[in-house]
Length: 119
Length: 119
DNA sequence: TAATTGTACTAATTTAAATAATACAATTAT
DNA sequence: ATAATTGTATTATTTAAATTAGTACAATTA
Image 1 (cartoon, rainbow over the protein chains, first blue to last red):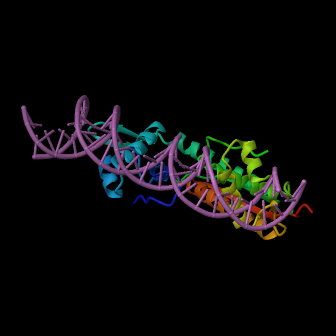
Image 2 (cartoon, each protein chain N blue to C red):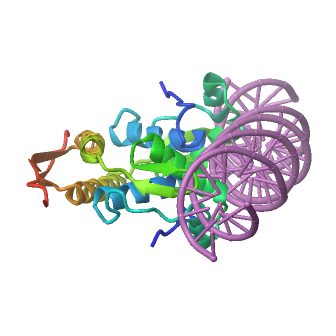
Image 3 (tube, chains in turn green, orange, red, cyan):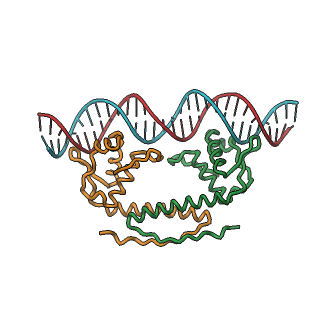
């Protein structure tokens, strides 16, 4: 389910954060759904539980999940704001790439069509 | 002239490679122009000469510069192919970002206008 | 002939990530 | 009640990559 790229420069905990964010925003992991337990996920991926915990802590700090000692970790309910944040992030990156292409003498005309969300 | 970002995750040698590539492709550093010497650049940036050497070695391997023991390092003559490579790279990245935006329900219409190069 | 330049090499240091090993509080299952 | 599960916290160790340090040598230039 979650694939770790050991060639990547990004640390494992950050890869987990990014991929889980995506699963949540794409509604593969749904609000209030329980996440894999820290120990289970670590075991499945054969990595250290501390590494998973680190990812979960960041996800919680960013509002993607909430955790309850003794119960588990769960996908957050309110994700609209988060999705907007991700879109802003990506559009920022888009502009950086386009800027570099301009520097190379390549002009990009583009139009953003904010999607009719799949409801 | 060359600014190092010590907060960046990218190592110093790679930051040098990227920035020098840009200066060359943008024709700020012109073909056959002499590069700063390894020791001078290291001294100016207060980094280790080995780090500069590493950057120069990579730049040479990638065809951006050529080096002659006793003389110095110089910008390559044939840079057209390299520029095309960079453009391909950036367009690849563009597509990745656009793909992620599609995943977020944002559609991007774009048109590439290969530039009328500044001659 | 001396100084400069690129290059090569080995060793040591530094830093962040990841692992290892426990421990404890809250919840759930038995 | 009691045991097992879960999140969380903490400290120490290991690992790997980047960087620094130091030295040496060949080719070129002054």
